[in-house]
Length: 109
Image (tube, rainbow, N blue to C red; front, side, top):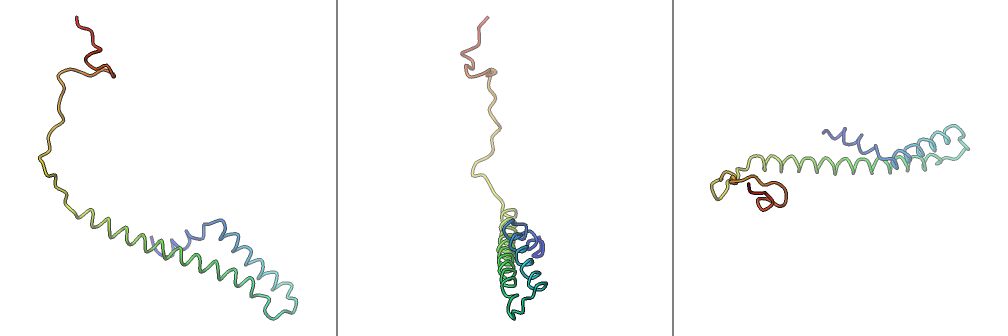
């Protein structure tokens, strides 16, 4: 996955979506109502900045984990595993086993 895909995936969290909505609503209300305050946009901007930091850190961690996983899977697929003993076929039993009783549960004719 690309970093952008991981970033979008990190924004799928319900809490981050609620915070995005709250930040956008705060900025929209400040722009619409104004109120004459010079720094009224700071609250909404701070919420959106916090969401951006959380999403970026989450995506960066996931990206790093994915790269490490790819490197380890390449190493494990390239490794050759040898058994210290020759492989033997499964033993065949001279009689069929039927249930937990096995041969003891069979009637003799």
